[in-house]
Amino acid sequence: LTNNTISQQFTIAQALTATANNCSGTVNLKVAIPSGATNYAWYDKTTATTPIATGSVASLQNATADSTIYLATGTDASVGPTTKGSYTGGYQANGNNYLNYTSTVPVVLTSARLYTRHPGTITIMAADVTNATSTGSYYYKVLNAKTIDVYATNPSPISGSVSGNDPNDAGAAFYINMPLPTGNHSIVVSATDATIYRSNGLPASGYPYSIPGIFTITGNSASNSNPSDTVTYKSYYYYLYDMKLKTQDCVGDRIPVPVVTSPLPVVSISNDTLISSVSMGNQWYLNGQAVVGATGKTYIPTTTTGSYSVIVTDSFGCERQSNYFSIDKITPIAGPNPNKGIFNLGFYVPASTDLAISLIDAAGHRVYTKQYKAYQGSFSEQIDVANLASGVYILQVQHGNEKERKKVIIAH
Image 1: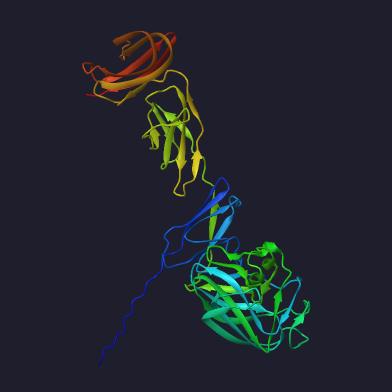
Image 2 (image 1 turned 30 degrees about the horizontal axis):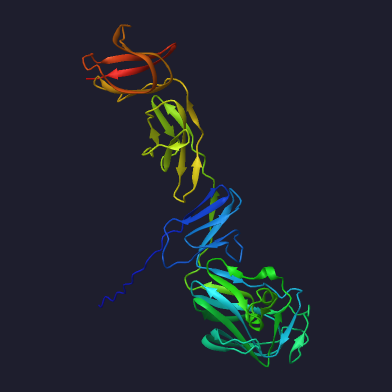
């Protein structure tokens, strides 16, 4: 017997995951593990035909908080006016006008809606146009081309050029399947026997027609008559309505990405330590000024009196500020605690009056005392009571009539 085997290696793609974070009205979008060869498209609806953003990292302005964005690999989207609508225009016998476009990635023009008054053939070309003149003549170099047969979409076929917008012509989507190269190029359309509709009364607000970050229709051949006129050409649109474009990578299913608004950080205190409710990205502030080097989740102040806060910066660069935590009384900070009888003591007293620092043992005996006349400002000294036995002591700081106590543990 012969044992014949076939071996084939497969690469299983990682599951698509992403985050959407709302930062004061700007929603930051991020693919968790992006692939450099993959195009990513973000949509506001599962049925949307045009993405609202593209790329593994993107942002949306004035987005609705706590909504849902949809992410897909690859792009299969529409660009250009969806129909000829009720705007003025007419059917041209030979075509020979063009749209200008810019594409950041290779795409395929899979189909477009055409309005044809007479059957025939239409040739669609990706081209580089040169030497365009005000009389309408131009040269072009063909980069890609596709010729298709078209039938009359108008219920009353007529040969030759015909002016007017026939409301009875609903048009039809014709399959094209022609690659459009990246860069700045044109789409030239010519017709043989067929007559093809173009608009000349569109609102100027239409241009540029765009799939964000991927493909943009920037203008057309109507600007040739007067290149300095940046308005008139916007009322014209040539032939290819509701263009369906597809990137050359695999178009995947759309996954929901909830838009999350991160909670504001909250500052609290435990013993001597200020604590941020957020683990990463902290910067501590005292009285509105950044504290140099204070970037952890916790912070032990060296000067106690003042207004403390924290600003947290996330991976998108979004900054969120906490509440203000004010310390306006003597708050002695002793550390390390526990210790071996040597510890640092710090606090701040705003007014000038006598200061006394004491340690009291469990029996109520004062075992350490040091006094300072008319003390004002920051206090920061090392207390050395290494001669004291292990145990729990009360540290007392008295400044004038104000008295604060805290527990200090000596453990030899």
